[in-house]
Structure formats: C-alpha cells, structure tokens
Amino acid sequence: MTHESRTYTTARAFCGHHAQPGVTQVPGALDWSQQETTPDQACIEAVLETVLLPGASILHVGVGNSQFAHRFAARASRIDGLTLHPNEQTHAATLGLPQYTVYLLNKYSPAFRAVLPHRYGWIIDTNPAHFACCHHHFWLMWANYLGVLTPQGQIVTCQRGMNASQADCGWTMTYGDLLRLEERFPVQVAPLTDGVYGIQPRDTTSVRRRRVAAEAQGCAVATVDPGPAPETGPMVPSRVAGGAHRAQCV
Image 1 (cartoon, rainbow, N blue to C red):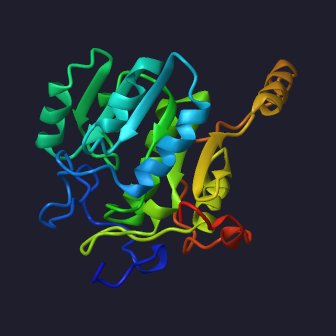
Image 2 (cartoon, rainbow, N blue to C red):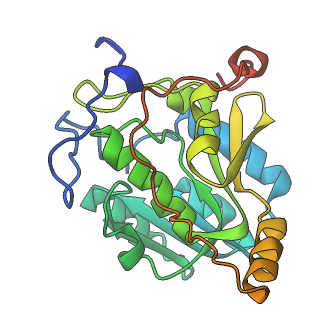
C-alpha cells in the first residue's frame, strides 16, 4: 500500500450524502471475482471451520470470488452475500448454489435493512472500515448489521483486513477501535483467535425484566434508540487490548 493510512480521527465526519454513501474510485478495487481468496478471509474461514454448526444462516459482506459460499454451502441453510460490483454477482450465480443469493448493496447504505429480508446468525466482514466514506455511514453500517443479526448471532472480522484502507476512502482499525463499539451499541467484543474478533449482542434479559417490572408498576420507561449515537469524539481504544491479540492473523 503506497498511500498513507488514515485512522478514524483523520477521516471525515460526514460525506454530505445521506442516501448515497461514497464508493472508492480506485480501479480494480471492487471486483475480486477472479482473484484468489485474501489472507484475512482465509483466517476467518479457518475459525468458522471449527465453530459453524449445520443450518447456519450467514451474511457474507464482500463476496469476492464466492469461494466462501462454495466452502460452507453444505453446512448453511442460507448464505446471502453483498457486493458493489456486478461481476461478483454474476460469478456467484454461475456456482448454482440454491441457498446462495448475492445482492448489489452497499453495507453503509440506509437502504440496507429494507433490501435484506432475513436475519443471520453470522455476519462476516473482513474489513469494516476499508471502504467507509465517513464516520456517519460507518456507524450506520454497524446499526445495519445489528438490525439483521439474531440475538445469539455474531459479527466476525479480522485484524489483517482492518489493517488496510483504500487510497481514496476508508481507514485502518485496531482491536481497541472495535472495543469502542461497546460504548455505542449493546454489544460485547472479544477475540475468537489471535487476530480474528467477534462482536455479539449483549445479554439484555435483565434489562427487559426490569422494564417489564417497571411498566407493571405504572412507571414510565424510556425507549432506547438502537441506532448510532451522535458523534462524541475520535475513535480511540477504551481499554488496552490490541497488543495481546496480535499474532497469526495480524
């Protein structure tokens, strides 16, 4: 990578386009239909090989060569994929996997939840900020993911993917940056292996019980908006963790 890496702090707060998030203009950056599986994707696949149960429902963000779907189709009840390039969608269709559907859809788009009709136990995204145009759409992406994730589901990403960004958009991320999600959303972040991380919804059972009890007593209960919180400053690690998890897939 010849360009200087950006971080959340140096990225734009808002790109100026609510409905149409920006897309990289770097030639060849969006079409991986004929490329080999990337190392970050291989790291995540190695983890899933050990934990994926039969009947899983998966959303694969950035389908590339669709070898992910080919590898796990026999174990999944459904694999939906996202791409920004029609070549990847066309290539996916040639595989003839009946439970595999690829959508031309930007993960940062406000149309995300209107387009995807299902919920998923697994959401795979090797590089959440790689193509981000601004803070606003980056946080919208996480709200999108949590909106289609099952209560026991998991979002999986990889440090090798988070180390990269495009020349004209995106930024790099650390494990500490992922931990900042816990300040904005009801999630918990933890390493699955060295360099592969999982983001899961927090157990809100006790919160729901308190809400029911309060309502039974006639108390007013505030409604929590699950969407992104307003910008509160730069994305910085909320606790020291990055160095402890850098190894095989970093």
